[in-house]
Length: 338
Image (cartoon, rainbow, N blue to C red; front, top):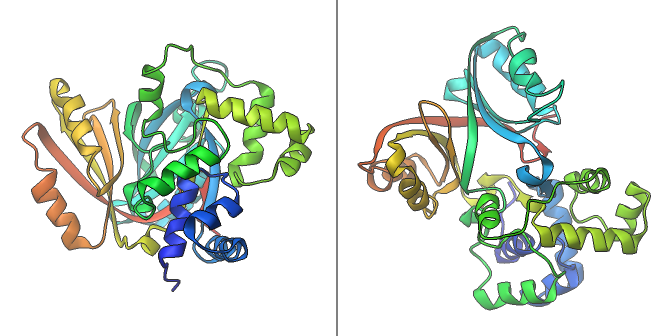
């Protein structure tokens, strides 16, 4: 099994700060050679599932997001999860709870003939599903543009500041704010993606480090036009970059979803506190009987137990359901299935 060293971790952190930072700059900041950093990047891509992807913010894409929980027979759960993962309107597909529950994020359009088609038509017709619950994602406190801390613990403040100062100007993935918080902090109207923007994002979805020449070829444009357009989209906060890598290589052996029921008057305070916990990669408010969901990444079962009994045991949380993640089929836009 591949073992990451400080250079690997530094490279991952640098990509989280600026996904498109030139390798020459990353190498200089890490005190290495460009050739070595490029070799490490290729090795991480081949052996650790490293992917740098660009994703539209939900507000700019005009879509809604739902956490959907599907209960299925063990013999059919794998096939259903794999089918969901291959759809372009899903992300973050996991198998949990002893192999009988599938959790996915589904992206829906608010209007039109295909609005909520997966929820209303496709899933109910799928054989083997015995129960469905859909939770509309209301607000993201941690996740999306805000990286899990386990990926961003290597570079010091000066190294990060230099990356931000010397890389491409614009709003990068490590602004420290979630999409909704960033929008709330701005008086600018929400920017809606054009067809040309979507074409560019489609090219960046699988590999956000494609050169401007490659992006120009994929979109039928010019390198200078693509460069200006991408800088504008970043500045508007219309997209964000994510770094996807196998969590086990970062010391994670236990992953679990936490479905919590919190009194509405305490929801914001509880979610804000949880968003500061090192063990969590996602914290989001949703509709439904459980109105807060979190994703815990822990070193082992003992650390998860310690977290649940010492840190997340807040009086305002009336109920918590812990669902261990058995397998990841899709993370962000990256398929994890053969």
